[in-house]
Amino acid sequence: MTPPAPSDPVPKTNAMHTGSVLLTNDVGLHARPSVKLTQLAKRFSAHIEFARATTGPWADAKSPVKVMRFKAAKGETLHFRASGADATEALAAIVALVERGFTAEDEESAQPPQA
Image (cartoon, rainbow, N blue to C red; front, top):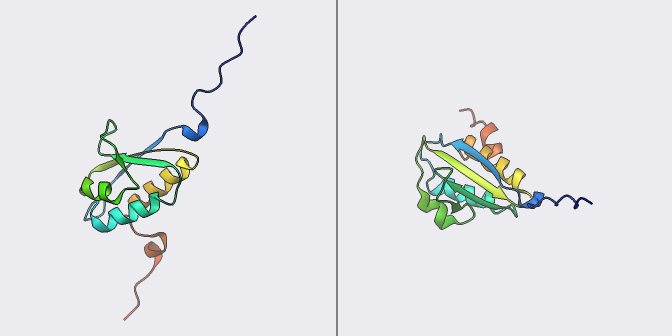
């Protein structure tokens, strides 16, 4: 008699999702971009962290103090990891925010008034 196959030891909701993105905005991860990053991260229930290297050290993306202390410059790569029920969506949204240079989707398409 063979034993039953073990169940998946890591539930799908706890799977770690990762992504990396290059900082292209002029100020890097300074005050305003830090606030935008933490505000977006807090919209998700997932645990979200980021680092300069895939080996860490990792910082909590929902902590304004930890994000602002990070001080990443233009041209650096940020590595993100997320786990939880909405980790995939959280990671996609955060990577998209950084790729847009921390502008909101509606800001990107907005045109300045013609003089």
